[in-house]
Length: 42
Image (cartoon, rainbow, N blue to C red; front, side):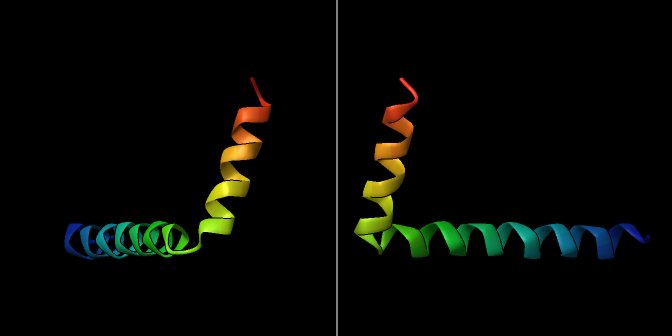
């Protein structure tokens, strides 16, 4: 695969992950559930 295409796909993948994370921060109930699950590990 050409380096230019690979870099473009990596950029798109990173942007999608960041968009998903920012969207989850707008949903406090999801963040609270995630924090509770993380805290339950300890």
